[in-house]
Length: 320
Image 1 (cartoon, helix red, strand yellow):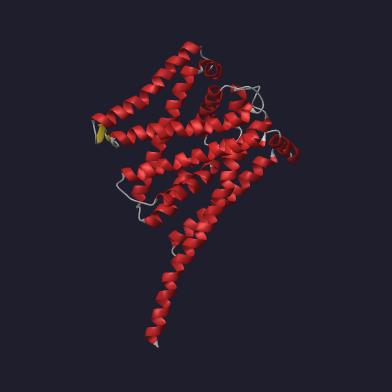
Image 2 (image 1 turned 135 degrees about the vertical axis):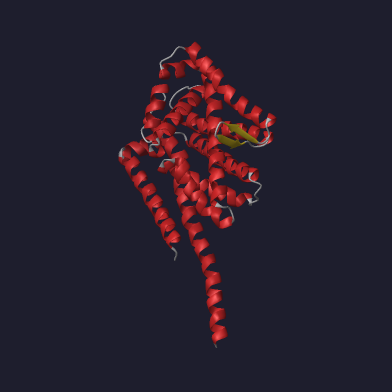
């Protein structure tokens, strides 16, 4: 086994151990009785609807990778892209430093299917830009539609919040405009940026925004079980919480998500709603992603052994 394989296998095991440790540490904060009662207080139909929104979000996230790979001029089956995206992000969301942690898993899979390290780096950057565009766009909409909650959290008046929201919406407009008019490399002083095609840029804004709306809808389902909360209040709470998570890089947004949502919607953000949301969007995908990772690693190793075994058999036959 090469040194590179040893390093990657070590990182893989370390990531899995960290994921298990995070699950233990998060659940350790609550007693078993609290967890059971909080989950039971959520109607089953509501929890299933939230799970559907979470699944739709991860499906939407796979489109980030699909757009990125298509923009590189590469071709991979969607099933492989979806598998890589789900495993990478279900673990990356919980490990923290999602760009780096999910990037390591992306490289693990995509390098086996013919993508170079440079290609994977471009995929990661493309997905990061898509995340940023989606978050900025939905944040702008939330600040315009619901300036009260954002203003209370940011300690500014609603009028200023709406101005910030309008400014935020300028970003995706400028991005798509540059992609339409420049159609190539954008050069700013010493830096150069390869812009996607206009259709791809519009798709980035669309799927990026849709993803955060789906996660907000998942959170809204949980919050609505404990009170009458408007959808855009949930959107405001989540985009502000996610911005704080991205700034702090706390694994799984532990504590940051709870604190921000509790401040934005104090009446509805019960322990039941927040634990149920974590179960739907973080814990269940983490368990599925970890299982798929182990299974895929076993399959890859079996396939890699077969050519070696066949080569050994041919060598033995020739020696005889």
